[in-house]
Image 1 (tube, rainbow over the protein chains, first blue to last red):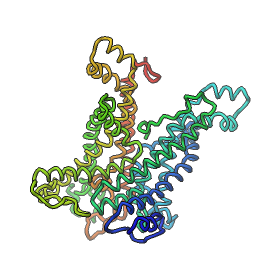
Image 2 (image 1 turned 120 degrees about the horizontal axis):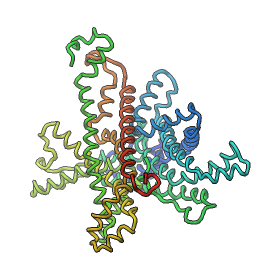
Image 3 (image 1 turned 45 degrees about the vertical axis):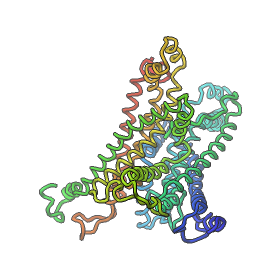
Image 4 (image 1 turned 180 degrees about the vertical axis):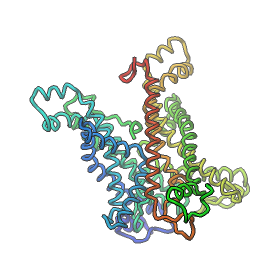
Length: 266
Length: 288
């Protein structure tokens, strides 16, 4: 099998287009790079959707946690505690079995598929982590900004919309960048955690693991996954830096640089 | 376990559960909780040591050493940790067997890697093919522990490297002014002072480590996830004295509660330590 054939056959294999069978013997480098690369599509799908949807929930959670009302604050605190205090791996398993028993009862049967079920877990997980980040930022909004808003007669929603929220985002952005990177890393767990890969349509690590099992040689497939993820991480940092520059456009020059410190959260 | 457990069919609910939770397989589940704790107890200090070495290497003035340290330190940044776990477990295993092969069977002529196979001479297998199951399990566990230590060592190296740079420069200059050699000022001034700067990062790392322990399951260790899945799946009356339906949901709920309690207790304990160590320090959080 030539390289071009491998690309034609496997470039979209993870979403069900192309060759039906995975390669079984004489694995070429081309096949491995192509097939693992097609798996990355799923990582991007999970990461991107969870990030976008989770962002809105996280804002709601952060505002709820900062609320003085007991019945609004407590659920948000518990939500954050449960999702940040337990391993994502266990959350996936638990969610899968919940969805499975729901399917047996005839409720929302499509949730046992990874595309829907695992996505929900990732959304809730990232909502909890980012909610905590946003909550922290919400509490450190400079008092002077809020006093200035009062002086201009801004109250309620318009004060939140124009003053509090933009500053929260600006303060939270570096930590949120890390969260986004970790979220994309977490997407590799999906197909190892109960959710089945239907018709061998899996993510990057699923295919890498397939090749490592078949060839008993970890030195090719895993570095390929690592390479793809480094590219993905660089892309995330680049995009988030653009946003960071926009959020900080009114600040002195030094504040605009983002410092990437991945180990300090999660 | 209890004397009334001989006739499981005729028991009341409470006694049934008392018997059910003390069957032999459940004792395996409780042992595997011990596995998690042993993993944590070994991995935490070993990865701290790796981290310390990594941070020291990154600070080194010798270029290859600092490059090595920096590569190790930044290893975990862009790549998911699970990739390293899966990679190192096989790579370590093969490296050990290859080394032993070179020593034990020097006159073996066939190539080790034949297509999809990795063949060493039978005497070089680790553990030997004939050794009992327990030895295989213990070996597998220690390869997994070592893998965890390498990966979390890289995280710790990151934290400690940052902490070493956070110690005020004036402290080191003072040490030099007293005529200390670089080695002396490193061990007497920098190392004692860096811990308070490293603590937030290290406590966060401890939480990440706790939450990474279920990944032992992926590495093929019979840990709590494995047993929860085994025990929870439905059992028919023909093969098991205590038949039940699919209870995996409840078992995983139990695991969730276990981890929540564990992380919560750690969080409280670490908060106390931070408070105590930052006493008298000149930062925002310190009670100066």
